[in-house]
Image (tube, rainbow, N blue to C red):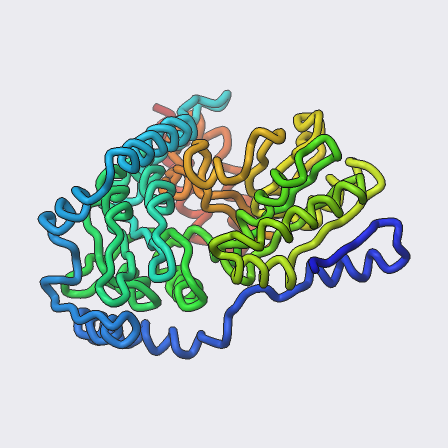
Length: 436
């Protein structure tokens, strides 16, 4: 049974707080282990990567086989059916078109004092993309990470994908080829993050690392941040569905299970203004769990972390949603636009009952790499902006420096930074000697 809550109950606040405070991350204390792995890769390079891959992925590599060869990639891609290839290409086209609209513009203007000011945008030179592997194949993750990087103009793209026991996934390699990835390394875990950050004899270092992973990958990303940029620290998947009674309970049930089947720590929450409908959805979830392929995982997630919350009205639903700040928010109500306008914190919003979250995972267009664990309160999903840097531009004319320089000199003196003030004063004195 999921957690059943009702805002009319006297103990609602304490139970809701407990729901928000649940520790869902299956993250044992791995930081010391990860620190050792990173140090080992920094010290021994390829040798450490090869040894750790043999230990954790049971795969023997050499410096020549750390990366897939072009022939290997071509052979694996040839195994993909025409139908799967067409689906990947359609998804890539839609993701590319959506992210192209995110590209910001350079700006330059002259202010009233005559100073020229502005900014320009430019891509990071190289990005490393981590693609989870082992338990499942995630070609969609390749598209969602690589395409925004290419749209941003990143010159060199590499991906790391673990291949335990040497098992490869043709769809992942095809997705990399479609996305414009330059190099595919068959390594994973903390050792892959360390190699991308610091480089080895074979793996060239990058400027930015993106992509989700397990607790070891997350810990490694935390540790290398500062040496390289990272996108975010991703936690277990989550979905919150706000639905009224004008829905098919089975549709809402499979929407909830679409995240529950990711892993046992995922969380699925239904908020409804109709308790009878909520029970109908619960019954539909139970029915679906009898036949779902990943029912063991989904059942554990639903029983441990799932919730059905009955509210007085949809305004209250929006308020509770903001407190959850969900990764995915489905608004299955008659006026989804009006309700969306009342929501401030969500990684992605799916409007109306005809827009299942799964569309966003694959082919809708917006990115599926989204903030989890309530971090949508202060962060956004992956975009081209993650692969861009803004450089500011300034040019002073003699007149502009005469107008604003004295204030800069005064502020420098207030901070006891003498040389700062002198660098301005020297120019002002020259202007006083020769105004031209």
